[in-house]
Structures are given as C-alpha cells and as structure tokens.
Image 1 (tube, rainbow, N blue to C red):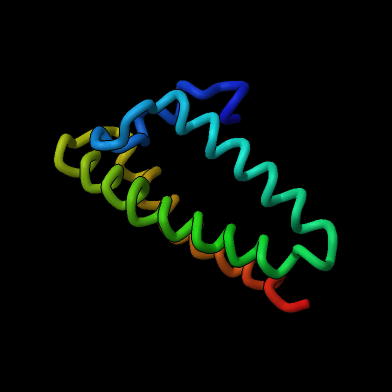
Image 2: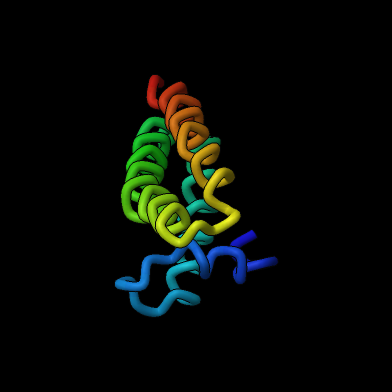
Length: 101
C-alpha cells in the first residue's frame, strides 16, 4: 500500500518528520526487505527483531500521536485508530514467533 496508495499514510505522518513521501516509500521498502529476510532461516531471527523494533517505533511515534490528535479534534477516525492500537501488539507477537531459530 505504500506504493499503490501512499496518500493514506500522509495523515499518519507526524508533522515533525520531514519528506513525508520519501519516508513513506522508504518504510515500504524496509517492510518488503524485512519480510523477505524472514524466509531464509539464517536471517529470520534478526529480521523478526527488526520488525518488532519498527512496529514499536511506529506505535509510539505514529499510532499513539495519531489517536491523540483524532481525539483532540473529534475526528471520526478516532475509534478506528483506537482499534488499531492493540492490533499492533498482535503483529508484534506474530513477529516474536519468528525470533526463535
């Protein structure tokens, strides 16, 4: 989705980050590379740990501030953003399963 519909990510990007379009593309590339590195058993554990780190950074730098902003502005997307928060922990748990060789 980073390349097919990057516009959906612009609203999530914190205003303090520069070059939103570039960072959206880079994060998409990183996600693809890390996913591919889950395939070989030699790189699986490190890739999973990097995915967890990325998910945690996104959680604290993007998802929580986004939810707070939606709450403060009474944005209709607030409920969806709150539902998305615990789902991030499911993704982290899923990635954690791949940290074991």
